[in-house]
Amino acid sequence: MIVQITGNVKFPITLDPTVWIFDDRKLTFNEIFNPSDETDSEEEDEIKRKSLRFDREVYQQKINPPINKSINRYEKERILKETFLMPILPFIQTSEPSSEVKDAVLVTSNGDHVLNADRLKNALLLFSKNGKPLSENGPVHVYFKDEGEAQVPIKGVTQIVFS
Image 1: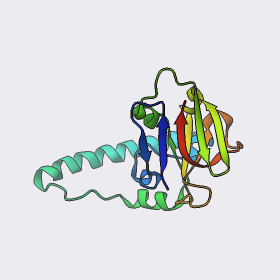
Image 2: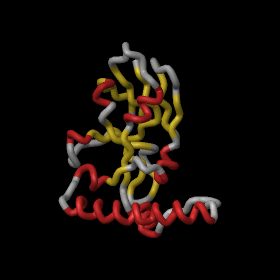
Image 3: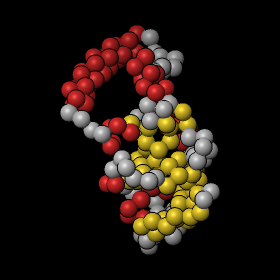
């Protein structure tokens, strides 16, 4: 259940998609492919709630430092029900591919897929479907935002090799 980024990179890295569920960079499938106007007002409300909570937590930390951070009920329900994707760009930037890199090979159990390395930077990795890790055809599926919801993802990606 890991994905390796290797090849002509300065820092080969190994990714564990099962821990991304706790990452703040994750996005829901609907946020990406079915954006709506309602999310704007929800986001504003969420920002207001977070700012109030932040103020309270800063005050509380001065009195009693936290032992460990827990997630709220809303986030817990969301984690158990939603389908999540992670942008691949931060991981590509961390691995620092050489400036000579032109292509990226996505290694899957069904064969290899060669893509333009610049196009891969805009890819999204599906790592959780309906609150569960991708055990079948996993660990990740590759989606492209510009192709929309109806696209056929590249499934079962276990390695990304820059060449």
